[in-house]
Image 1 (spheres, rainbow, N blue to C red):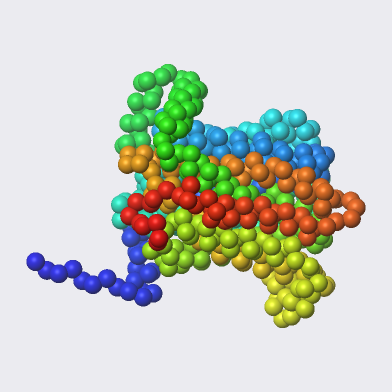
Image 2: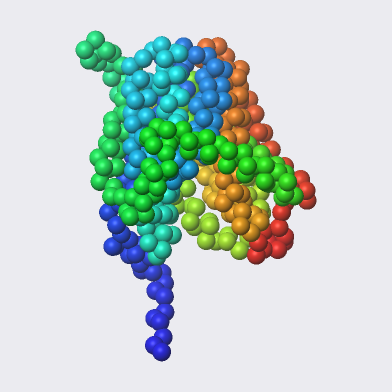
Length: 486
């Protein structure tokens, strides 16, 4: 029997792994495109939301923070948990079309209305539903349209495309704000934030033709036929599916509550939620902080892009270098690095004046960020904070999902994997309180103490690594295939 040739190593071997996509189906490439468009539109909206709620609709910092933290963001998480079963019932293309149609309607409302009740009921809440429909559908499409050999690389690319979408959104966010256009169209004069929503609406509309060219496979046709035979009427099928999904979710938690590992994994995810809250503040706090401390229309989008760019580079690198260590240990180390990064923002800005005047500071401020005049030390502090935080995130974030899978009882991997969404939900609930912190220490008018605000955020981030370390004896569960010392 002939021996198989040895694997090609080095850069040639690395790029050779992508050659499996050479004969990939058209639908897989369309899925990558849809992922990019969806996440670009979503990220633009996310960065704009708190500014629009306060400046266009008149909500206070506290109310705006509560709306995004306790209404908009959790609603997306809840509907995401229900969307998977809906996709199974009505098919990928129909779920795609439904989600994009809802988003298009909701974004249109948010572009034109300044009536708070109408904007929330017909804009923000439907948008949460529409955005939620896209998340599990994209994952399912990547799995369905890729072969076994392509699957690993396909999911790596889909993760990379998501971060490229974030980078594009950050650039667009800064560009539109710095243009500060004033124009009238048939009596309608959109604000800067409505212009940003208009850009996200345009991107949303571009998704329709991409979905149209997705072909249904035989399996999906059969699934749609079974669903149509089981229940008559498209909307009735949706209602039945949502009800069944809610019952399945309740049964899942009822089944898990009785297991010894459940309480410990719940505490683990609760602690991780403090790290996710710090990640979320980049969209829900940083834009207002930038405008109030760095100057109106400060390039906070490009600053946030530092995180997305570094994550694309660091996640696969650190993952490869640390794979022999346990997921729990890497989460503790990564969480500690993240918290340390946030403390940089609580240091005296005077310490970074020389850094702002250095060649690096001048390049960062003038060349990368496009700032005119003197460079505020907070630009240097923000860049350092985001760099350190990104390193920590690269250590802990992918390992959270691995930990959930590693401790799951046999046959319940999917159930424990679903619980991995909880840290984001907890983080969103925590970030709902950030409006009060922002109003107290970095208000729109009056004296500001941004260092105290960031100290509170840093202490909150420290809850995760400290809690995981101090209570590891009680909450750590043995991981399949690893010793406790790993």
